[in-house]
Length: 518
Ligand SMILES: [Cu+2]
Image (cartoon, rainbow, N blue to C red; front, side, top):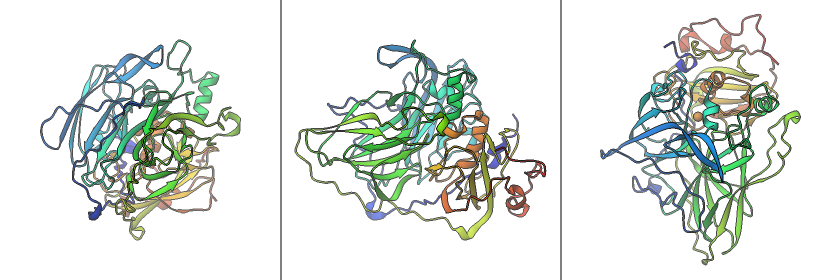
């Protein structure tokens, strides 16, 4: 097939986290927490874990099939869905750092699909990009090795050209957990996986995916498609148990197409211990936390309530909308999950390590290039996605600063873990550390959601992929630049230097007569 365009950017980033191993905190290798298991009073269930067919040490070999399924996604109603191995969410892929992973994938859908391993640092031909569709009835073996230092929470989903949002809305998504040999958090903690999704259904139970030209379809494009039914692991308002004084480890993944969650538990604060790039250096105490589409967070939930009491995990109001299309209920909190305290007496507090791992900042003195990335209505630097064109070439091992400018009228949720408000211009710093085409960050401190971008639903998946190709590489806000530029940046002229990056195959942008849309 043709040249992999943007992906050939071959960009891989290194982040601000170079995990060290805080020896004093290191724990026995390959310990798996008492996890993800429900207790007698939990109604929340977890997706099944993919069965490892291999007996070879350090090898995880599994089979995954995407197929149409008729499932009761809503109680009492049968929905024509898509499912991985028959379940929504799909089964969880659990691996350890260093594992060789073999996934025998079969596509039993009537349309092409792929599996994208969101956030994992793997070769591009193994990452299920739109460039490598698996035909209906076809199969593909995804084979990759989990890099050291990449422990964390990830997810997988289809990434075919133009149909990504559709296929995820139909039910194709699942969790990935990469475990560390030296996880600093006690393995004795109850660990929970919370996959947050939303969806909308017709009266006949079908997934509501309206014609893009219909009023609802246009609203979906304007705001991103939000659903009115909120699921946790495919369940509506389930219950989890906790004991007074207990410390629980929650891994949260937002697989929703557009909904931004602002999570809080009534009467509780949360210890935010990790995100897309795994554990932080230090826990951060928060009252609530924003989780954008595709983002993952790790939380420690402390059972500060009294025996027998109850609390609620809710998503709190967050205004990411333009006034004209703001949903009526945007300022209402939605319940996601009940947290029920057992009547057992409080247990003694479990200490949280003050330092989870060592994180080394990137060296800004070694920056090889600075790029201005202007995000506007469906375009990056005025250009639409083209899979045959290469937009960025980056030197292997180089570190670059990318200035992201949002000149659209909406917030853009991206690699930076927060909304990029109109006019906001953070810098991000990236390093290119893995050879190859369209590779993924060596250590993904922040990864962009390739598909479900609230402000970018105007665009085709190809265009979204173009943004992803840029922003997946974004790592660390370096500083905030004065939002002085609303016109086309002097992008290639100043940022692209042959000496640093090598010859570029197409004309510089912008040409004198090109203007960014407003
Ligand atoms: Cu993804």
